[in-house]
Length: 469
Length: 117
Image (cartoon, rainbow over all chains, first blue to last red; front, top):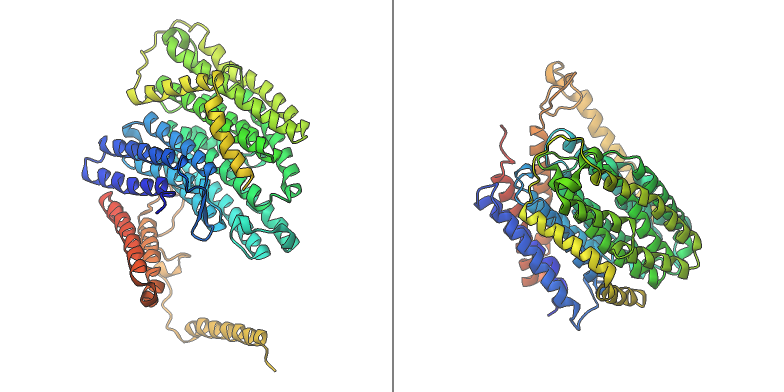
């Protein structure tokens, strides 16, 4: 009896219990949130237990899913993302009673993406991740939220179509659905090339790489704040994980097919994302462009195509996600009843609430990659991976992008630490659950920057195993 | 000599012929009652009018739920035909599947998904 898939099963059971909690208790009550959080905790405990299990790695259902150190690390990351999103939106009546159920369902999709080793499972994971997020994006009803949901739905359906077409072509060219059984040497070439290109386009659409990034700022701006947090962290983890497993397992020997293309896209994404972040006036849009730029950093780890790249990508996801959680928690606190926050609204934050300003500083500096924060260590590993892969262009692109990004991230801090024009403003409320997320994220960000060794050990194990598979 | 592919071609031709015959027979032989709602492009129960500010999605919601549960129930058919060779394990898996479908149905019902107003 193997417990390999129990992190996922426990989330399935948790979804049911959460649904029952929504139905049984008063619809807008807090029980469903507690059940959702308990599900995440239980799933996390099982993931940790699996980590030390001797029976892994294991391929199940005819190699359709693979539970290994890589999938467990992805599990851990998306569980953190889901817990953060759930707690930032804790018992918030504005998002409707379905909020915890949908968060758990999207979590299940992200977990499936971590262990998919088969085209069908890949597509199910992508849809399971996307469908709840379409609804979550529109969960504030009409207005900007509805617009964001509709845009996300239309463009997401479009990208799913491209992805599905690519997968169909690959299946036609190779005759197998399993990544590890793909043998590019014996494929029908034009079909395989077109299939690979379309599949990669469909996946980087979800990741938000530059030619396919148009939907991200609008959707992030219009969606409710916890949902934006979830999309910025969880979706990127899932999409990066499946892109890496698909390319590394399926087309490892034919890196020439995709490596250079992804490298150019990575450099383009890093530079364009950070440049556009400079011009933003809305804080959510700024973080959306920051998310695009960070997707470019993640792509560096994939196109480096070595063990260092895999390790750097897995490591970088954690400080990036923690900084996103902290930044959005601060925005949620300052925005209060409103749904978005312009840069000017931050003016005088350091005098209204010194702690919030300090926490925002840590988050922004980590995103910019300043030493003593986790973001610095992550970028360090990414540059190391690019140099080990003999691709100095990638490293230069990353550094240039990070330099432009620094200017973008310092702008909100400059507002926060300048004096307000004298108008008195209402005091800032600190919701308990959101404060826990904020403090944990900030402490972990600094912890990762000062003492990254435990996490490095974990991702080393994960990436090394992954590479030698 | 008719090869396998020739048989396939014959099948395609017959399929097209039958489809054409059926489609055209209703046009030629059926009674005609033009006018009213029959003249609108999509017979979805809603009269299209412009400009539309608020648009009722009630019909589409019901149609969508019907589609979802219809597909779910339809996937029972291949299971039922091969039940003998699936034994107890197949029975239990379909029971789990049915629990999931029933749970989703209950949730939609409870949250008011089937209410017309």
